[in-house]
Image 1: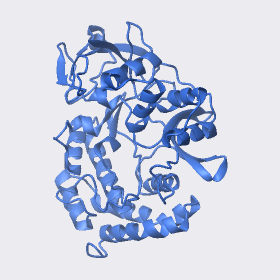
Image 2: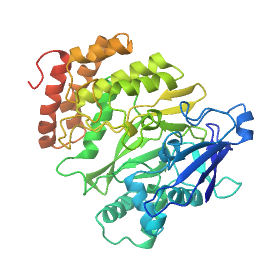
Image 3: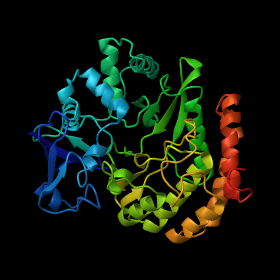
Image 4: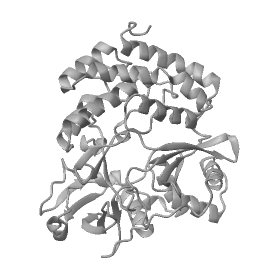
Length: 414
């Protein structure tokens, strides 16, 4: 049995015991049973809140699940995705039997790792590490990440630095946590394995710029050079860290939609309903989700899966996060992960206005106009971010088609 006390770091920096997570030893196939119970002290604390407002209501009793499926999917949220998991496994030399989720949480508990407010320990004392900058420069971390991703040798010191800085973030692409005078950042690095012919760093920076022009709240962000002008990283300000050095609790829409193997939320409407149920300001957040959906449609962000949408908890309760992970269709998928009600192809203006009516979104036409106006500046903004002209021309062709659909200026496929 693996037993891990669970902690929450509040926005003011205090870390409190919130409950206990227990998992059976994974079997040969990695399957395990899990259960969680809130601590009585947390249930009495004036700052208490449910870790999952839809599946883990505050109260005595035990919540049980197979693995980290609902109602305990919030603990899967606490784990890194492909990039971070691979780092943990290789840096800690975990044998195959110890690469399952409970063991990864044990490693995170041992080293005080993790994004958001949740942390874990193996004793009755919190092991949450204080925020601190990477001891290795961003340029050196990028070199180590490139070698690691390519399967080349990384010396012990560089691997340890990469493990400390890069094993917490989610996603499949290489990224590390860094700190400077401007605050706490996630540095998103170029990927020799995944970028192909596209300047993904420049295009994602452009996506954040365009989203802001379209009226979406986005995190602060900037580009940093990595030794040469051609190699760059995108630094995105962490929205889970407060000015006081505390944390904000985060929960993915995958968890709120109760996604489990074989059962998935399939449409933006399902996301909107989950947001409506969980949000402290449902009308405002549903309207923000509509704008985010419209932006993804116009910009061609087809990688719009459920873990690219999060809610964060603050004094007011749960709110939809700022928009992030905004990339055009560099994978040439053509279809979105999420359906616009019934289809996954680029929607028309009429289709999105019909969705807005069902969601009861006010001023939907004005929202679409703002999105169209913002995304239509793609060529100029991408050029200002030094995206190669070949990328601008290729991506711009698809974006132009999508913008025309949302402006009501052409039939689908035109």
